[in-house]
Length: 578
Ligand code: C2O
Image 1 (cartoon, rainbow, N blue to C red):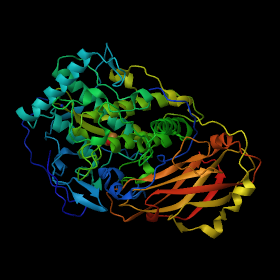
Image 2: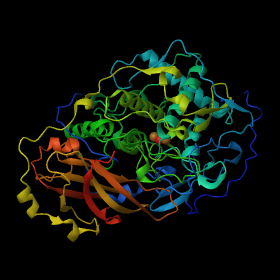
Image 3: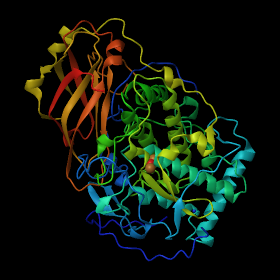
Image 4: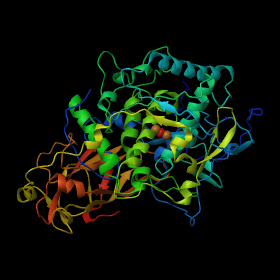
């Protein structure tokens, strides 16, 4: 793989026009059902210990870009514009590692052409049906076809490295949109970033769409569909076998060796940083995580999809990503990437993630989660109608090497894009936690807790228990707000939050008392610190813990990773913030 250079450099170099030369592109196991409940915002938790290596874990590239403060906003009508390929900076790729921004010795700019057009979706008659990768009965002919298609894509790397359909060129697309080579048009020095915002789902849907169409065209089968890694189902919670044979096109050597199936299948964790080892507990935590990020946590479309991100905005920090992106999505990247590599390549860093064929299989499931979420009834609208969202656009090369401009609006209806997903079970949909029959004894709990005024602000060196007044008694529709969380941007930080918890088992996030967690991945930033709030919906949780007619609760905050790198301003409960 490309060698990496770890000289420390300043972020955001001045964009250099490219004089690149692509001549005229020919015009691009069933679990025991334990139940769990719901939180709001951010990923989820459990785990603890072993901080050292995790500090290095996933310099998930430009992902967690700049700060979460939105700067330089103009009025409305400012969709994110597609990048100008002539301005792509071949030396602009950076990542974060060990608390530093480092320059990557990799040119991930696409081949250049000035011929481009708006993409028109063809009309599809036969849908491309994406199969589950872990279902035991994936047809050998299908696997052979997949391997052949990937092989043809890899062959292009050798026969014509400038062919935008080649495997490395495809992988580079992700790097270019995530790790800094593109600036926003008209905003020199301001990164274009497709993560941590409402662009996350539409961008990746288009990315997979063209990847799939290119594979299909390389094997002359327009109905060819990529597989999806059904990690949301206990039967799929391990690395899909078809990707694991050394020497085959779908194999990638840069994966965590301890997660490669060898007789036993190590179980995936969907909780970043979890150190749980009991497979039954891992699966239960995973299903809880899925329930939370898909159903329990989001109280608005942007909670799930990600926050608005418009032309001129600095990329958001931790608070910009939706529940799914920050939760299961990131966890799989971390789980697959090799922690022995300098920057957790391949999957553990966005600049290299696309080099692992598993990336596209993983993201097909992420995309499937978007389709499933849309159909789950909720008390909020699942549509984002903001024109800045709908008109945001990206550039891709299609299967004929034409450079095309695509919009978010055209990615909202996946069926129009000619594909669908084979159905598989979604046990997490019913994985709300078991309700406590007897409410916790608030009086005795309170004896171990302190008042807000006494405790805060504080640095989260140890577990804290605090008595927080409620605006209403009992099971009201309320939100817990952890305010003024200040984090060191270069550190991986994680803490978990529990309400009226008498058991103190932070590893088990499938309990009624678990309210959610805060996770910050180290990110590539100009500012040293980020400030933000964590909001957790308590409505379902109050039902789950069967709260008594109390006027306060006891909130437990458990540092899980690098508590000393986070300070918390205060904690309060307010009527639900939609
Ligand atoms: Cu663009 Cu999974 O990341």
